Length: 315
Ligand code: 13P
Ligand code: SF4
Image 1 (cartoon, rainbow, N blue to C red):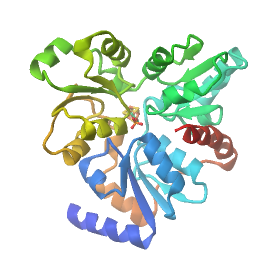
Image 2: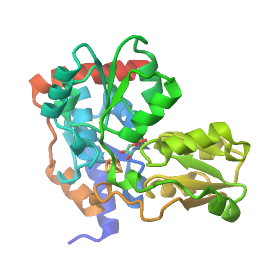
Image 3: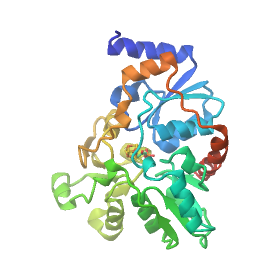
């Protein structure tokens, strides 16, 4: 049995031997982030999966992310260290449920957050992520009815920012972000008076936070961002303290990129057990044995590719 350090050395060797690239989401455990070739948000990782010249993609994220990489790069082998790494949000709508919703709303344009299964993407007109959802919706003619899914909080946020009334929103949520309810700004402000507040749009508090940030001067330091948007903000903001409302795995990268700044999780129990399923041991085994392959059947991948490509062209 190899030690953790020996496995990390082997992973570096195997990566070269097998012409593999390791992609890791911002919520992965620190050791996985540190050994990855790219760490990023859903959108950034999809873009890299589409461009990489490597023959194999090892996706340290959750299943729908590996599926998305396989759909974009059908010629490449995509593997994931743990097949059980799912997503409560992606599980909140099935292809059949979407087909029924479309039947009830003929002519509507379907916008799906990228946290969805390939079956749902195949029934979708446009995919979006938390960083480009507003741009994607703005690209759809104003008179078109929109079905937005599956995240109700991101949907409410997009509806408020775009000012469109013709958006129907699916009642789905991420079990981690939903619990980040309304932050007590009075208490937080007393503890961290000069902090910037970075809120992920999947959070239960995202709509009320956005409203506060536009209404009250003392809430001007509230910002709604995707995980990569948060990283960019931390690096460019003159603030030295940040309250972070998302999965806590992201704090590792923040501390690494801005070591002189202070970071406080809005809720330190915000941990996605699916993202944490990818361990060094599983990554090592995955690369060595080239398991577990995630391959979307061609007929489904061909349908699901179009909304992803539309999304990537709007960025
Ligand atoms: P980002 O695209 O902002 O990284 O979000 C992905 C995700 O799964 C959030 O829970
Ligand atoms: Fe899915 Fe939520 Fe985990 Fe993100 S944090 S992968 S949305 S369950």
